[in-house]
Amino acid sequence: MRKSLGGYDLRIEDNVSTLKSLLEIAAARNLTYHILTPSKRTGSLPWFDKSITSPDIIFLLSFTTAQRSTLLTSSSTLALLYTPTNEHFGIVPVEAMACGVPVLACNTGGPTESVINSPEIEKTGWLRPPDPDVWAEALQDIVELNVDERTMLAHRAKVRARSQFGMGVMASKIEAALLEAVKMGPVEEGAQCSLILGSIASILIFIIAVCLVL
Image (cartoon, rainbow, N blue to C red):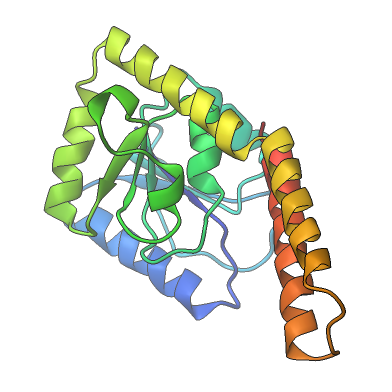
């Protein structure tokens, strides 16, 4: 069974069109599916056949923190596919690595910092161009990992997540950023000050997100 996860807001056209596209792709390949959402969610969803007891795909919209943690630590979870291109840092690959889950992501943006694609001895995931055929090949490699290979990759991923993006490391980085800001001396109100404060705020937000995982 495949699971497709993500935040979903009916007010955001991109969310609606993405789900519609995924459902059309599933139907074109004769794959059955269910759509699940938190019980408190309101609004209508596309129709699907609820009589199917064992669907090929589950689309889990706006999943909870508990659901995320359960899925990332489940022995049945073989990989996490992170599809955005030119994404900013992106916490999702780090969350997966912290749980020892192999990551397949686009070779642009944030994942190029968090995920190690090579050399093989340091590998924590796969970075590939956004091409369906290329991703299919990479996913096949992930599925065919033997127990020892999966165990070693999981260990490397966990070590990297904690050593590069753990609470202590990020605390040191924000301290260094603050010290650097102090060395700059007084600044005039305006763009420069806003830029510094914005950078500090971004680091704080990132630390909070990481601490929720690690």
